[in-house]
Length: 465
Image 1 (spheres, rainbow, N blue to C red):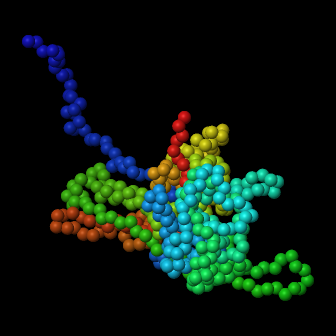
Image 2 (spheres, helix red, strand yellow):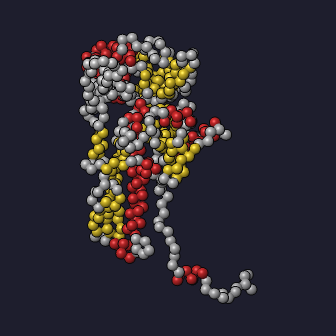
Image 3 (cartoon, rainbow, N blue to C red):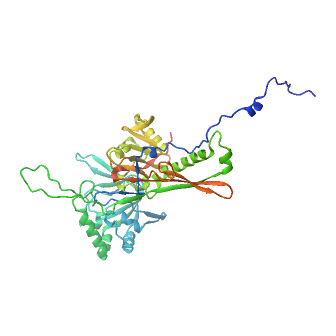
């Protein structure tokens, strides 16, 4: 039977055979996990010669608010975690666990509906509130009768702790539910009853009130007495600038791994690319990726966990709007950069498109970066997105001269390969495998609280069309 296809005798060398004599052009090993790492590139880095960086500040009398934690064991079992009540300014530093447990037991859960008013401005403070879940709006009546929005408070925030310390306090503003919410409520009479039974609590609150009414500047720092506008020769008061007696110290953190390379590979397979160099290059990229993640997410020094609660705000409606970014930027001077997850940037662009606004751009080291109010918005995929599709946007002032955020490292370490990173030969084992210890030392410091702010609960879910 004749063949189905005609066969022709070749007139020249086949390309597949010719490749045996040809030199292959190849790339270096590629890596998908490499990101832009804008945070590492934009932070000013301070050389920490002693391995520890101390942030000295002026003495502060005003105690900031933290967030009280709530345990949710079921729809009808919501409880205050007693130890976290010390996040209330009036209870900061109070260590009697039994008294804290008694206070926690006075809180009961209450469900509120959207639009429901919890307290009205000018009425007596009869209860203390902790938000277990949901969003509340603080509003007041303006000078000309208009309704003014003062801000949004959400999970873990509290209000009404004046019930502990003041004789006849009144609400400074109205609080209204923006969404369905669960709030924990403690009657003032119960709190005053516990106060009457605990001498230690009364003494603690007396010290708190003593510090509260000391003269301070607008940032809560101990005041410096200065005379101005006087004439003649009045007697001038002396003064001094008091310092915080317990400044925070940052120790350098470390990320390490042991790189192993077989001696046969290192000896025989180095042309045209050095095997050890390529192994080191990719390993260092992975270490730097982890370094940036730690600078954001580490509970000891990460920016997301160490931002002062007074510098955290919430979006007004969920998605990041131009109004939200304006609120975030206006909280500090010289905001140098905004850092956001790419999905948060896309959500912001959607809000701008909805309003017919065009987002600008700015040149950063030859890169065209989107900008708002002239401040570049850098993408960072290491900012986490929660299960409910919410994330955070950071605003930073940077540099020691501007009392901003700085990165910390030490240069000149033994066998340094890059600034703050060294590669140390550990020897060859009985299987002829060489080992190298690769270490990166780093941390980050916030010099004053308003150096960084966070826009929280940013909804990045794309709406249905």
